[in-house]
Length: 82
Image (cartoon, rainbow, N blue to C red):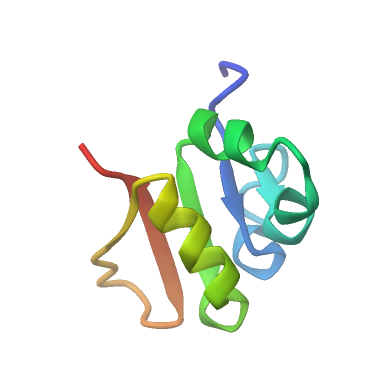
């Protein structure tokens, strides 16, 4: 695993499948280096309850976009635009 093989995610979404490969969304948003964390990540996996205007604004600024998720409408996946 490389240092940037992680996703930023909601705790509920991550557990138990991503034990050591996720950064909690609340913690990441509070960091001064949020931009660096986000850019180095594989993307975001966020429960619908954790999607906020602040998060959507930051993701838009960093050119992340919502990707279709056919598994669950309660989980949103964001990846960097290609």
